[in-house]
Picture 1: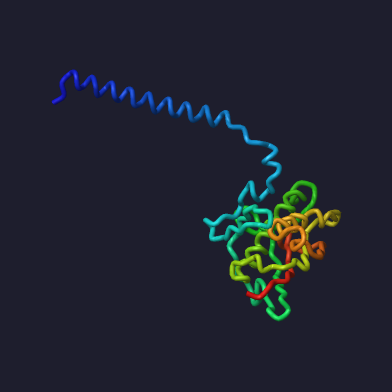
Picture 2: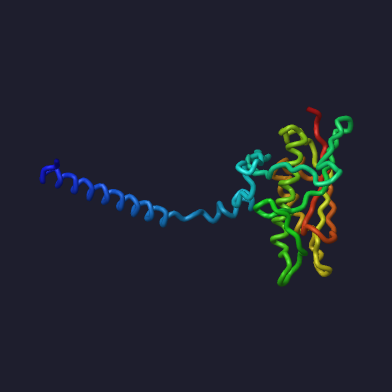
Length: 217
């Protein structure tokens, strides 16, 4: 049975504890409110480094690019028909991929036509889709080359298809998104090869395929 003195100590302790909690929350909110991100640093980071649409919690790999930037890859996927996502020939050291369609941040294929106007996919958004297509290509290379992207000794050719409206012709600007990923992964020399950019038929808004030279394991 508590005496009046002990009851007073208990109440005083509870009040003090609640006061500490309130002050802690207030201080945390104050600190968060004073935090201002560096715009220069934000602009300096590539889009994917900021948004991280793919991460290891979805089964994808995290790889380190040529400049030390971490690239978050989607999971490597199985083909949906009688074909291979990629095929590697050790004799010629050449690796050919099938086309990889641009996806959104949830790794779902984005369908539609690219152009300016209501109901169309904006060119800036299409460039992001091309970047995601590049990351899907890297995921396939990572899988075929047993998790060792350093085996890629040269990007030979990138083909980019853009499903644009008839008046849209800036295919190269869109496919730059994929080219930039390859440069981030392999550097300015190995990551740059020949390139073809052209219009595509119905289906995904953007799709890309790749030919690289890769050393045997």
